Length: 258
Image (tube, helix red, strand yellow):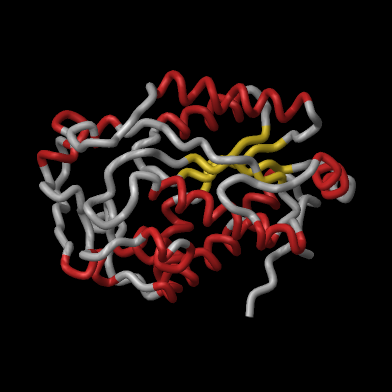
């Protein structure tokens, strides 16, 4: 069963559903699940755009929407990027604001009959999203955060990603691969020679990214490829099945993959 049918292939950053599409899709399940991509607007070195995390989160969310009957939401494009403040172009909001926005969205969805929300996070610095989900779950609401580290580990193994999650921190193999697959037009020259590693980042929250990298890159983007990006997204879509089973046991079907 396809989540959004032919329309899913036409999704850009903003979903093109009509209200009738949402009503029809929801009629076949007792619990509707919404998917909210959360990105950021922060530096990603000299070769990836400021909107990289948003593009990644949206690519994951589109893959999910093509496989499950979810209500795909437009992305949140600015979040908690304070550790990147030393670079021009980076914009942040407070953790309190992000917390409030996600909670307000979840409340609004429930008022319109969508009981479950999965937040697809594209930026590792959005620590507060874990608290949002914890608090919602404690109130008896249906919410989850995706992908977990285990989902990324499974995806990296399947895609043949060589860099560890510790080393591949920012603008590295994973993000470069996903953009080479989903948005190659946004990948600039220079990623092939931009590798830089800094595995010991224990003071990151205190001193920020600029204390660990001059270029803004921490990882090995030279190892990125479109094929790896395709396999990463396919694996994440499959992993999403366990979230559907948890939040809405009758809410979707497993994606069909070749």
